[in-house]
Image (cartoon, rainbow, N blue to C red; front, side, top):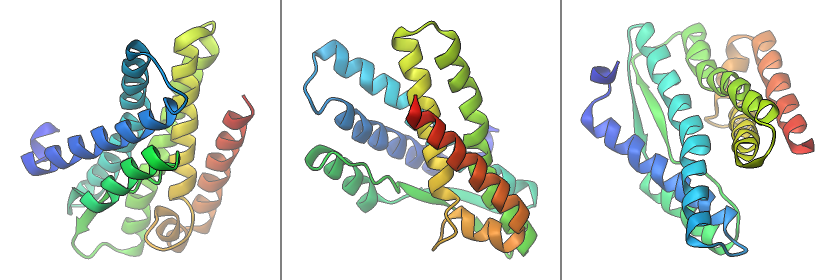
Length: 196
């Protein structure tokens, strides 16, 4: 699989992964933290937010390639900067680090399935993070599980909104029933994670 990810795309994914991990770390340490806490929150962001983002984008890529199209993630330097600056100054992360572009004339069905692959990946990632949260017996592992659950549910819910260039618009155009299942599942998991 790695050979299907060109060096430029790997670099873009890595830069975006690091930038959004830094942005989320800045949110977690707003009240101040010692160096060990800083390292913990950065590693937690890499594992939760970073993995959620990278696997979401790769799911789009490999779904498109399954249909015979070339697809590639491209970072957006301006939006990466906005994410880090807003986290540092305002305490809010607006993470739109780039997008996976599909080259070719995908049909409505193919486009819908390619778009659904990202949020479905995030929903599947909720399972191990929820298990970690529920089965770890508390402490730092439970916190990592909770953050991973929330982040994946948030990414899935946000991307399933049926607006602009988001995945939800393309999924809805392809299959309203699949759209309904994915947005209800995403929003439901997000709501549950916020109650914990």
